[in-house]
Image (cartoon, rainbow, N blue to C red; front, side):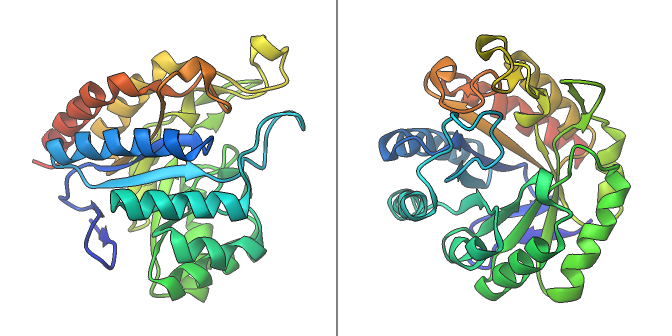
Length: 283
């Protein structure tokens, strides 16, 4: 099984490597909160011996309502991520939404993320692949909610054609199942592994109830945060090489996807359990 490593050697995923962690908060709210969450997650991962990447979005471009909080935007957001990177000395993961953003994001983020809804957009895939390869990073591709796991081979193929030296990671984040619901097919993790790439589980977004938040009468996405540990544990047991998780010091007050994010206070216990499951699967 392939192992992917950052060029600076600070993070690795796949093969017989320990559980890789991509975690932080859903969207940047302010620098202080980002540093608080990143500091605690870095501490926990260091104690557990788990490779850690800080994740946060500078923009949430697919919110249910035009009035929903989207984030600080590209300029301010990248400035905040650069400060987190410098102060905590951790790699960064963030997502790209337009072709014009690709090169600038790849300058800051070692792990550049292709959002699920956009993973079939060829111009965006090409721009991100070329920019990430040029910057020496890794591309983290979220499987769309409407794609079968094995159909991600076309995305991997596109990337390989324009950036043959670029390492790719695929991410499972649930599949649309009827209206306002997602499910995770754990057999899909093995199917994506068969493409020769490491696989992560985005357990936070997998518990979303799209367009079904009762607090806003459907003007935002609902979620079942109690299901995040269930999906994370199941996916790691099924062979996922890494976890993608979002935390908040006060989840109910989070400005984006509050029903799905986890309390920071529970991060240590969850990651400890996930580490133990990973060790069993690669023994």
